[in-house]
Image (cartoon, rainbow, N blue to C red; front, side, top):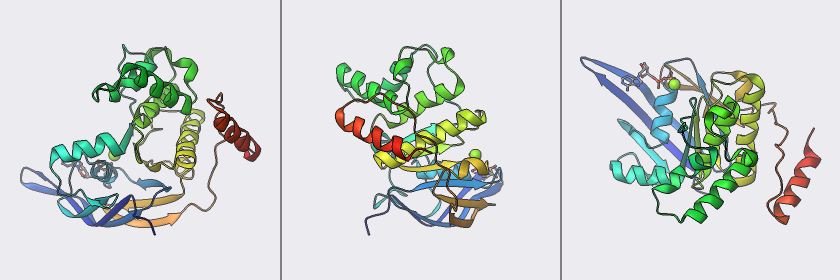
Length: 259
Ligand code: ADP
Ligand code: MG
């Protein structure tokens, strides 16, 4: 078996708030392999965001071990974690966090600005990422000129522009209506199927969770359920103009499996 993307073993996280200790995660063990698509569920306050922050190397556990791609990251320095976030992990949040005065293309180019990547390469990669989310024709629209669903698609394009192996999304459809939510889930399915990006997504909506392959449920900081999705929903693939002959072939293949 290949090395799992995520391996957490007896993980704990305790926040110290003045006199009180809040045990946000207790004794959590979980393994997630490549190609997996996991939905994390649980009531508010059950520890979902705390887990996502640790998985995303934004925070460190106070107990247990977290291995990412086989490397123990639970005790790494902040700068080492920053490097891991930059190269391996994409983040999508409920709020799209786009820069209002930048158009879609510029927002997607942003993560590459800090890397000294040539502007022509940045442009090319951003276009490719916008194509992956079906927004190539909106490249020069400002966030205010787009719907919530479109803004979230720009945020997804931005999250994949550095080719992460792991995509973490905390309630990405929380601000969207049903149609836009389903479309966003279709994009995650696409990235998971076609690019092999491992997706871990938090949602409190059962309908949304059934787009995933596996559901993990938390209660009071403990993992209480871990099971495959029995009747997985598949979103009809978004239409994209082919970028190359290879893409054209896969687009045709997809069309055949569409319901
Ligand atoms: P969820 O995302 O499932 O709603 P969280 O992970 O945000 O849950 O929170 C889990 C618990 O940890 C809650 O009791 C919350 O109040 C507490 N908590 C979360 N973040 C912090 C923090 N930075 N400081 C102190 N307590 C926190
Ligand atoms: Mg949360």
